[in-house]
Image (tube, rainbow, N blue to C red; front, side, top):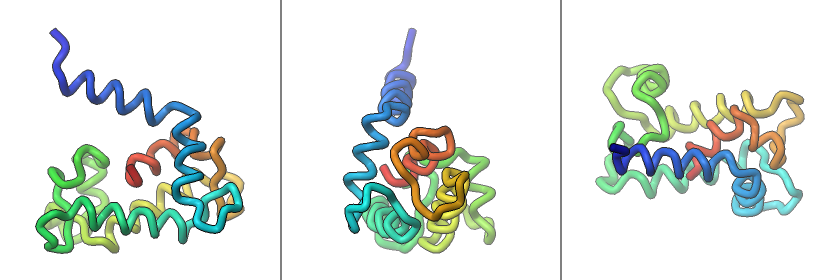
Length: 128
């Protein structure tokens, strides 16, 4: 029997791997309308999402609030103070690492093709 969680995970992965979602993400977060995302645009989107994911307004996100955006292993690696939560700065640090991983040409911007790469999809999980 397939669980609801498995179905939801499969749907999420299908959406994230869809090239149309990558192009849509560029349109959503591209504030200067140049057809690419730079680190400032990505961090702005991530900061807005962080605030939305923090319903108790304690300035941190725990595994429940992150809603599967990071695995337990990724959360532990991103949590230098080992308190089981991420502050905004810690979250943005992960975002920046993933941005850099998705930017193999090191031009400082991501286009839809780069966002549709494995590293790009990992970044998009943090913005969705």
